[in-house]
Amino acid sequence: MEITFRNISDDDYPYVISNLNSWWDGRAMVNMLPRLFFKYFKETGFVAIADGKVLGFIIGFFSQDDHRDAYVHFVGVDPGYRNYKIGKRLYDFFVERVQGAGVEKIFCVTSPFNKNSIAFHKRIGFEIMPGSNKTVDGVDFFSDYDGNGEDRVLFVKYLV
Amino acid sequence: MEITFRNISDDDYPYVISNLNSWWDGRAMVNMLPRLFFKYFKETGFVAIADGKVLGFIIGFFSQDDHRDAYVHFVGVDPGYRNYKIGKRLYDFFVERVQGAGVEKIFCVTSPFNKNSIAFHKRIGFEIMPGSNKTVDGVDFFSDYDGNGEDRVLFVKYLV
Image (cartoon, each protein chain N blue to C red):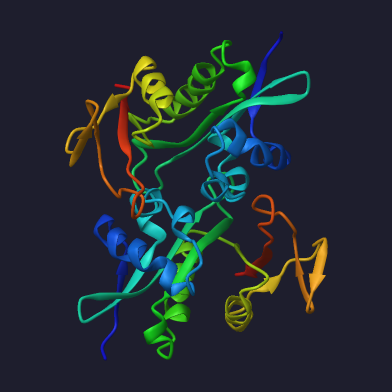
């Protein structure tokens, strides 16, 4: 299977958003990914394509306030295509893009219950940020970080 | 009552996010406003403060891809303080900031059912964008714009 990668476009949004919840095991993710991320941050968003179908995507951006920082808001891969390292390769495109612009640190957050995401981010060089106020099953996280009940593990990857 | 305005800070997030749903008549808004907007877009976000309390806020950003465009993701005012033109004044700060950086167009979206928001945006100089695929009660909107069932009215305000 030949997988190609390119920057996201507006036209990718309908397919991605209608598959989003199922890619996340049925969790309600749609409200976290409004179309704005596909309209105003195309430069740092990428999709993986095979047979004309989106197999995965990464949505990130430069910090607007500090150009040494960047943030990844979403990375997702079609569960039917989990053995092609698509998530890692999407991150590689993102890292190359932001590193070329002088970014020194990439941040992201994930749910403490998303063990796959935590393992994945550690594998590709992210560290869990200290200062958390809770630990469950050995995972440090910040309770209510994104609102009431929305606990998050905070990750950072140093590029320099 | 003396109202002061300043840029948003990380510390504003917990108060805003715990009041968000009630400011929106009980709608589930929290997932649409993750903390990232208070961490990486401080330069174009503002809060209104009186008696040490946040009375309103605006969250927006420059398009990362086209610096002639900016976008407002959220503007909210405590329902107990609706007669002080706080929303308009928050927008004034945003417009001044982005216009000073060369922005020519500001975009935002709102729910077709949010009549207050539609009236407010028209009052402060936004126009409803053409090209919509649905009209209800004379309001043009795009169905499923932000995902299945997430219809949106699209607004633009021209600064030049």
